[in-house]
Image 1 (cartoon, rainbow, N blue to C red):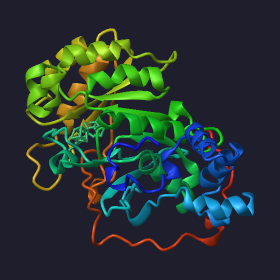
Image 2 (tube, helix red, strand yellow; image 1 turned 180 degrees about the vertical axis):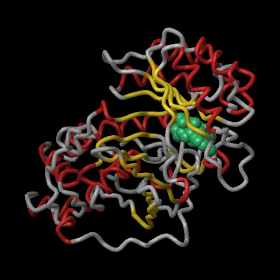
Image 3 (tube, rainbow, N blue to C red; image 1 turned 120 degrees about the vertical axis):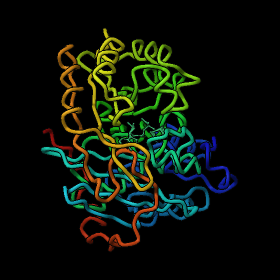
Length: 379
Ligand code: SAH
Ligand code: SF4
């Protein structure tokens, strides 16, 4: 049984079925001499009905139900806190089995919700503008902990069935935890399980170049790249990763990223006053991205306690955007959501808020899986 990176402490324990794709679960059961189709049954209970106790999986043969807890387990991801921002954005705190905590953020769109999930507890990339980066890496999340943020919320909150998009833009650098992120994507997109559409999953990277080509080969998901500067000098100052993988290598990997027709790479660009927000820098950015099918998300810097940068004035933000539009780019200023509860980009610390609401158990109907099979709405 492969041990997911970062779960070394639990080696020797029974495998957590939530860390396995359907194919891996089938192989695991086959090795134990069990019927393969049991895996699909378990998958359905876990991800279609939100049931995570073997005892409650009533179509499993009684003898199997009695035996399986000695051979495997179902990990828990405890939803321990939630906060709602004035703009409706919600932040959820999950406590992992070893006591570490990570956050997910639920963002309201027109007809559905987007869930921003974490891929690591902390992050070791050290970007100077990011609160998560200042914590450092505590550990990689297991596949079940990454996918579980979405699959748990689906059954535990009223908005759950309307979560349509998943963005890996919470705590952590997804490509620094590649194997587990990929397994989580396989679980999330499995038609026998959560059945999220890969076209609605976005992986955001600070630019770990060696992970970009494998991602385009191994999964059909959207790519977002946190660019934040149009030249190596500025970018290295903001993002240490640029020393190892400078812009030339990063943009070459982006140009080679294979996408279905009409898909585009998203470049994220945090605007910081006096650092990367000048007219000249906007021109440089336009030249840099020439020929790449992309859109540019401009994110005015979100301040957090102790942050050293400032958000530029509205005029400067508009001017930067207009320069890009003048060069025929799609450039959007991303409204900062959830900033009052430190839920906006770069503000996640995994600490939750002591003043937040402690969640009560979900209503019975949800626990009993009455959301079963509810399809994502098209919007
Ligand atoms: N590690 C990945 C994904 C998580 S960071 C990455 O870097 O892409 C998610 C996004 O938040 C990135 O686009 C990052 O540039 C942005 N971000 C980080 N700190 C921020 C801040 N203080 N204000 C605004 N955006 C921030
Ligand atoms: Fe890590 Fe992304 Fe924050 Fe950089 S911006 S420190 S890569 S989470």
